Image (cartoon, rainbow, N blue to C red; front, side, top):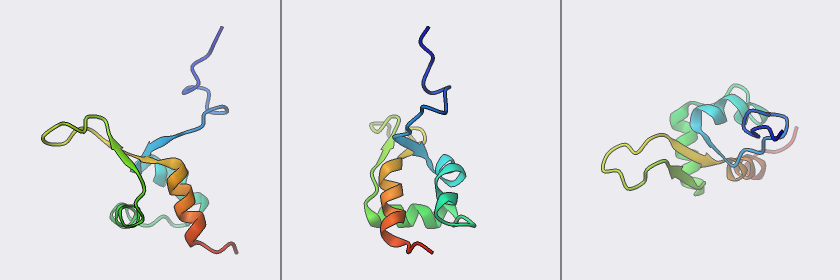
Length: 83
């Protein structure tokens, strides 16, 4: 029986995540404590990190915003010096 890969976190390779999920799972790998949501949003916008909306054609809102996890990781690796 095939299991759902989303539920099997050992094999999940995230491609997109919300800002809250990034703060919880990705940012602590590079920065502790994590910067504020607004700071991260500004950094990602300035760096051109791809973001996606569930419904980009919506006049208002459109659901949560998802960021490319690989682009966020590249962003941090390119700007932080390993210590």
